[in-house]
Image (cartoon, rainbow over all chains, first blue to last red; front, side, top):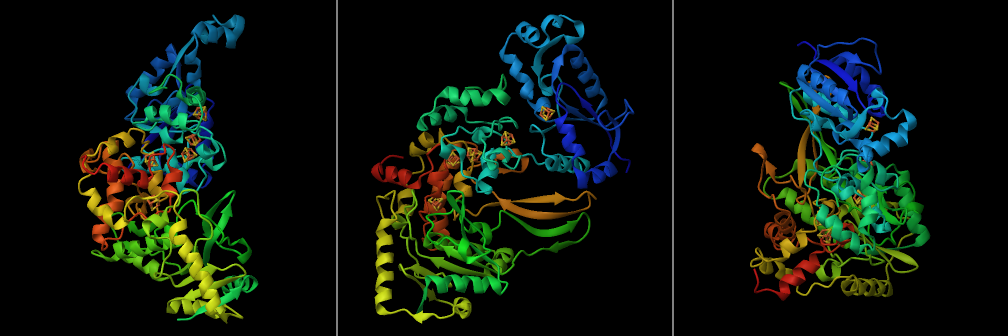
Length: 248
Length: 346
Ligand code: SF4
Ligand code: SF4
Ligand code: SF4
Ligand code: SF4
Ligand code: SF4
């Protein structure tokens, strides 16, 4: 069997998710052994146009990036979105809450009109081209990424949880943040991170995106029972929930 | 069999002697301001004065993730057993009853050797409840005390513990108890008073019928509006399943190694409230509505499981789901009482 050729590309992001792959210490050699990495800016200098699997990190924020992702899509048999920036737009989508002229002059000051700084509203990858698989999280969970790759190599559908963070959180016997009157987004956010934040004593702020059918109406009513306001919840959702999916 | 008495110091020595002999003991310990079952390292960590644990001891009887076999694609499969002997120390009567129910469920019909082999190696040391938790309603469910199903039952009578060894396993463990005296009639009277008090005192939510009436009640409740009304707020987060001592549904998954040939088949906890719990081949979900899933859980506790195990109700009133449900809709008593009031509807 010839090894599948894999290329990794990055768009607007912090490259933290690629770092999670590099950090897969015990497994990185196994991974490299089963695939043929032909392009990966973070780890090698070669470039290639011939690949089976394209792994995309980052979100689309410029017109020229739209063209670039379309070309990558046309060359790849399988396209994987890696990390929140790619799967849901991630933190980058915060800017969609403001006018683009304001954002640009705030960030770039007097250079705002330079052509190479010609950014627009942030889009997740699947707002431009079809995505075959999503590896959620900011950053991704390396072990989950490895399991998804193994499933793909076997031609199987990878297991990605469609249930909320609470499932993993309860399994770890955390005391629910809501019991301390802290609005946690866990009940509407996709699991798979092993409830990282609640396990460390923080609320979930939603980096893995919504479950398939989040009960946002419940969130609206439940907040009253805790003597909190809808705005308390809204401010928690803005970091990863801006301008995507159901909102409050 | 006779009941022994150990003063508090002797009891600590008893537990430490068991640990010193290299036996694995899982007991109740503090986790921040709550309690959990965890591997016990020393008698001084044991908290028999606890109110309730976050998860029930089910996690040792039916582990959250349990390897069943290792396989090689196109080759052999080898059965894997996880059945290390252990002593579960400090189980409240309602949780004990839940384990006894599970024993029946895993041995009736198709005998589950993975479960039963493990279970046979577990010694159940129960203890009477010393402090009511904020949502317990075991008195309503008639599960506040247990007169069978344990190897040893411990009761804190103030200055001493009474230990009632009911089985050979329990008696064998008593060999580590140095300086035990026989309980006097006076001691037994104290124990009786504690148990009688628990029979009515562990009741933060009062069920307005005898639990034995529940299967009958459910016969006419299938189309009642309460399912829709409650489930409107349900997140499908499965927390009510996870924390429940009587939930035993699992999902089977294959985990493949990097050689892409060998792997492990595991079973992991599942929950009937989760959106895709009832999804079968072809992506067909036969319990697609939140209300149908919400109803299913309360029917299981009050009707479906009782039908399999001689009428025993599969809610033991631990109250954990009441605490765990962020939306505050999971309380079985609220639903059953509502159905009692409106028996003619639905
Ligand atoms: S998802 Fe988070 S960690 Fe990954 S690239 Fe984007 S910002 Fe960085
Ligand atoms: S802390 Fe958050 S994730 Fe954990 S159970 Fe509570 S709501 Fe769910
Ligand atoms: S708990 Fe929430 S915010 Fe934290 S890693 Fe998991 S999904 Fe992301
Ligand atoms: S249904 Fe709720 S109260 Fe009843 S046994 Fe389960 S967790 Fe405890
Ligand atoms: S804990 Fe509450 S919200 Fe979560 S699935 Fe159960 S009933 Fe629904």
